[in-house]
Length: 149
Length: 169
Image 1 (tube, rainbow over the protein chains, first blue to last red):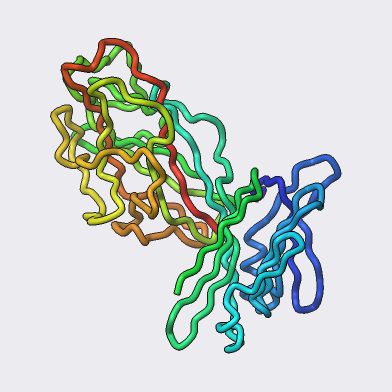
Image 2: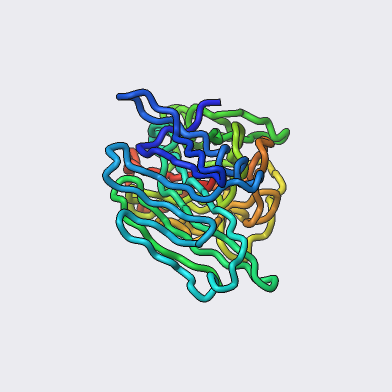
């Protein structure tokens, strides 16, 4: 099935260092099969997940071995005390989508659109759930960081 | 891979379903796809309740965190929309009753005018519910009613936008 169209490229890195990019013909919007991310993770192979702008000038990503977040040229470890415990990071990879309805005309105002991209990791330590998330605005590239526990 | 989200409406004593409604106009009749000019709302009265569900199909690992709110557009004097959607004290999935034009006893919350912090429409009776693994399904009922007072001026309302939002992976 055709995937969601985004103004981004997705790059998945596996343990076998195979890099998979979203299929893209030059000049066409890129179509990404996000289901591939979780399939690869279930197979225990996913090392990192990156999103790149189409002009390759900016990227954001998460590394599931180190727990690091990468935003452009910056590397951030959002939980160094957790990293010491070497947990099993699981990817959080969510698209927040929406659709607007005109109450006046009763009709949809266009197709569904991407509101935010939510990327990060989750781990469990001593039965407690920990999450570190980046909320990425696809238009402004603004990133909000949030954590649970 | 993407989910498809549509709005289904339910009307009448028999809970008649109209899938993928072509419009969501409020009016003075309990039916889907209303023509407003045919069923206008008298000043000081309410619209018939609208009983909607978000119908989810397509390809996805999970769809959850359903939010509904008024994204844009102002009310006329005395005009408002009430709903059953809420972030706290969610009473579970509503059981269908024939939509009424009297002041709703189900849509009793003011329709949010900013994005709720968390889900305000449940799945399977819970705000924490989800659709998983490509299995299609419907949200809980979203019940809304447009209400007016004697102070509401005659004529068309302002353009208002309702946003339906969800998280999918």
